[in-house]
Length: 379
Image (cartoon, rainbow, N blue to C red; front, side, top):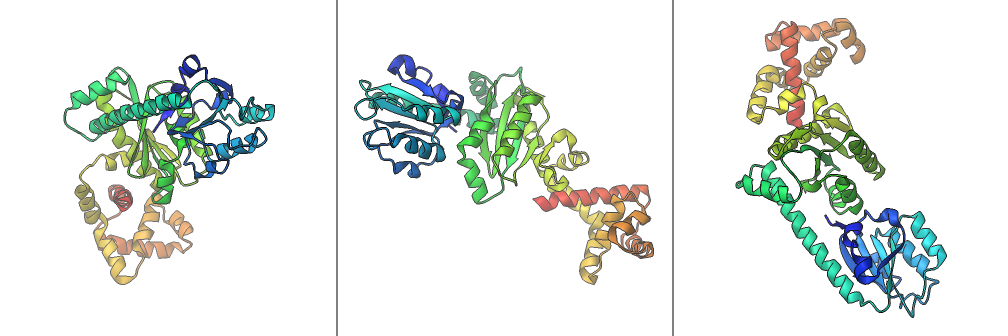
């Protein structure tokens, strides 16, 4: 998490005569740190999100400035501040055009301004902002996961604009584990997307999932956020979105909802899934004691699973297709590519092993057990 360039530079023009020359549309970029660069080979060492200052002493005049700016943009720098003076006396038009086209903020700073003064202030503000955000995230986590002193955490959130009279939506985004999750955590563009809103919002990682808390969000904002996430280029991400609930005390329930929707999205093979649309899985995820679910699945389907395992038979998958076909033997046979007599023979075995008649009530219980197993297998 970091401060946006717009917030960081809010008073820079009046205090330091630091003027934005091009790239205004990139001012929502987040800034992780401030860095002084005088060597054209240094940009390759950047991590992304740095606001770069330079006097141009190592660029041998303005001819190397455009390649230098391109390198900074390629390595996800947040912007560039050029100290106008003996090494670079003006910004070449082609550099201004490039920065404007690429939404890459480019500033000029008078030579008489000491860079150390402005970078010191910027670094201090970045640190202060991160401390404030950590306080915010800690308060959110405590409310979500049931920490003590809830009234104190609510007070912290209210001080930062999260009030009891607002509606809240929580969104869980999973990018996969390992390298993908690590890359997502350090992706400054992702943080920019998660936190962009006209209203108060916050974002943090919980395990390999990015969680964003959005206040009074609109359908239009959600659509924009999802479109921007899709543009990142990770084909494996999934999104779970909670219902909209009023008040800070609802954050815990919203978190459970968005995580449940995220989990259900894998079963239902949906990239984005709202909690309101997970159907029967609401009942399953509503059971917090996993042992209750395991006991239900075992008592309902356990004997058939054990029989298949011991006899190398396929009664379980046959039964699942039969239940998903609303009890139609013909549809089951077509889906499995077998004769309907084969299906009837296997269903006779299912009835004997499980001691059921496969009437409507039996089919409902068995299908629920399959759904329970799907959820348990994700754990």
